[in-house]
Length: 294
Image (cartoon, rainbow, N blue to C red; front, side):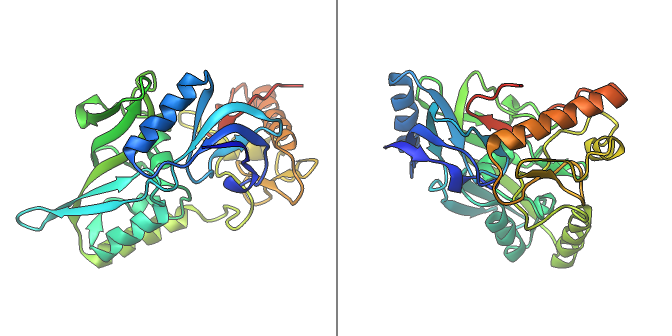
């Protein structure tokens, strides 16, 4: 365990200060010990994966950060008839690596992850999806650590699938260490066809820029990006933070942004949408540390 560990290089916006303690467990047992240590020190616990969906505070963060990057084991189990395969994958497995593995093994179902950054744990915790497709029906079991620092397993009957919301009970689960996915053998041409379709949905997004993905969730029946665009948010800037000119639901670090710049710009965009459309946008990104409106 490390103290006063900087987090700036561990998130895709490239901003933020240091946390009180930082741990990098390699096994579920070590993750349990990390949670226990945070509880013993009466520190708030934050779980960090690929850092692709989080805004980290500039100020020192009185919290324990558990980084899941090393929880990256993958195990394949084939069924008797070979038509389906179960993949047990650690929370720290990158989404890109997992998708590449399914293509290699001719397994369909995860094509919706095309172009999505980060780790499996983060993607599952936020119930990542695209085009109406997601993890629902594919996840059979989750291994986790509860708030008593015990390792537990949750079957699919305990999952609750809601739009961009954690499918497991956050009052019970402190962090996910791995999950079991059940995927079916699929012709490669069908897999590539689906990948092409999902890649097309990313058109217009500022790929390759310092962003954290979509900042806001889509309100029911509406597009957050369209609402922001209609308010003239594209190109708005505070300090080094700027609303992407290609997609208004993305905020870019244009080189020297602080997390305060990004947060102030997020709040300004929210206020403009509320004023013009009467819609109170809900954040899709997570916040690590304390943030206050001006």
